[in-house]
Length: 262
Image (cartoon, rainbow, N blue to C red; front, side, top):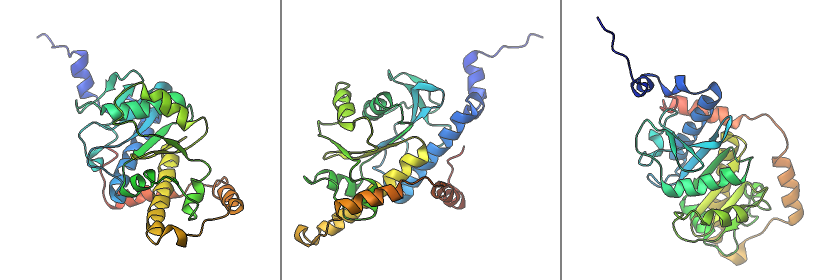
């Protein structure tokens, strides 16, 4: 009896994404999927809009992005879409592809900054409110100390669908900033790892929420932190230390039985 041979496409379907990728890529996929679930818990979502991305280990021209159409708490390590810097889909078990605006913004940052292993972009109410303020991020709280002095700004040009905006976005981001305000649009952070970019966005978002609350009392009633205290606090919060926040967040997801590892 003749044995039917499986085509390469059929074989690929039968082999799980976890078994097809490296251990390093699977770890990044798991962390990135966890970041999406955490964002859903913290209220950073905009239905299916906004994106978190991570560079594929060992492939500088490839990164992972959410499938266009999934809610954040539906994202898993396996259904993240792998795309190259030309926009070609390399891995997508959903078949839904990606949002063009997400590709323009995230592809730009990954290409412009070698240290941008993870890029997080949000459209939160507080983030957009501060992005519309002429003064930008103010030194109002301990949370904002991680942001003030590091943040850069990019003017609003419309929905990020045009590839030529990437030149200006990369220029405005600069060579060292980890925090960016997309004016009248939202917030963006980058990091050397998913946990680093995520936690930086956590403090960015909190700084914006605090600023919106403080501004509600009136600009003349706000006390700004001095430049000297800003620099001292930034040095303190950026000191080398063991990362304990991310494992704690993953334990929280496990207690909630969040399906991000599949």
